[in-house]
Image (cartoon, rainbow, N blue to C red):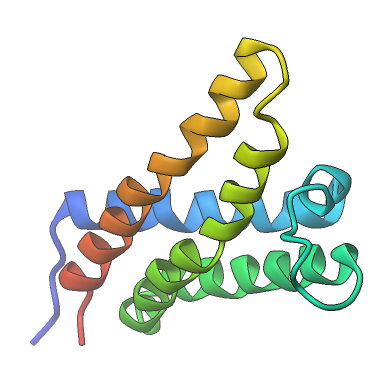
Length: 129
């Protein structure tokens, strides 16, 4: 017996994996913007946290991309999206006096975590056991 998945669930998994893999790669290719939003309360250099979160995004993205690990990968993605919320809050605080377009971008990132968590949840629910 084969395990069939709906085309929408495969598409959602592809989108989720793609977002994570692109973001994770960007943490290594252009780390400076990520360094600037690492919450200052975290110990150690910001670059370490940038690379660590990028590595996590790459690992989770790879897990979501593979059907055999998709379910656990999607659960990890939801947790990862929640874990990076403090960086988005840090960015919003730091950018509160910037010009309106930049401020709007920083504030716009905050509610973006909700649809990302919901997407991860959708992929988790539709993934084969």
